[in-house]
Length: 434
Ligand code: ATP
Image 1 (spheres, rainbow, N blue to C red):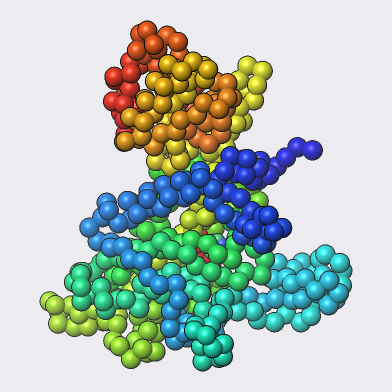
Image 2 (cartoon, protein in one colour):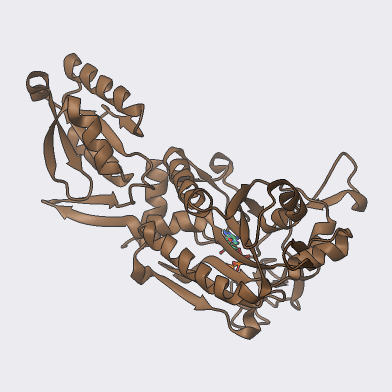
């Protein structure tokens, strides 16, 4: 049977240590995933790239990191307590649960053809209890989005940073949703990471700013190396908009399982600040010094998923290429995202002088470049391993190196090899990786 692209990605992730099934030795916990050594680097590089573009390279956006557990009133104000649900139907025979929206035949179980219950609302927030007493007064929720942590700090930011409109607050953090039908590997899980910006602006400017964020975020994915033909914008129809939103555009990626959302950019108008004002009794308004008037800013929210983007870049970067008689699998991740930039490999692992020199070169590179050292196989195998995890350059130390003090540098994408002198190596690689 020919494996689908998705199967190949899942298998590569496990084989090479990007992503593992959660709690695997206990039979797993459905739809939980653990990031391994390469996965965590890829994920961190992605988050760094986002933070660089959205915080460091701008003067108008500041970072935050807010608590996952929040006062339950937050979810009343945000509407999550009342509106954040999916309709579900349960099978009376096999007891499986389905999202009503996904059902082709509303009353019949797609798995065993048993009768389904009437569809009922199912709140997607995970409930828990704060403190040792488990009663209703101690019920709290795992946040289903990071955004609310930003809204409730609006006054703290005004008082501490004194920003002028328009300005934004950015946050990367975990969110949880008790999804009825998680799946497609890490695409839809119950615990995931979000990268969110809440961008505050004057109501009159909001349409223009919303449109410019859609472009800005689309281009960010292109700069990450995502192929243009695999990325599209999808504007929500009026009847599809969330109750608070004035406009919303999804950025979608062409996953092997179809076009699906990577990020949503919404014009949330003044809904959030007004709601939190109403529920907290604190006035979440902006004071215009010149006009001497206060008002509720509008909020533009670009909200993306870390895990979904990691999956998209993995799919996008996956290539199978015939090299002579052999097939090589290579991840052509861009240089910002590649977990390891350089690998130093001794050609002969039974020659101590070669091994020693290779280790020394690797150690020296490690000070400024993410470098791996590997001597656990023949060179062909070592190259293949590095190609599969997207390492940009392999540096090989051979017998000749001992005499001419030069190493072979092999490029991941072209497989072209160059001899570079050891004392120029760091400079050469730094330039390539710049
Ligand atoms: P969907 O329609 O796919 O359920 P959503 O529109 O509910 O997503 P948002 O509430 O806009 O998603 O959340 C912003 C981003 O957070 C999404 O674009 C996605 O990247 C990410 N995200 C949301 N839910 C999940 C999930 N269950 N698993 C992984 N990522 C998620």
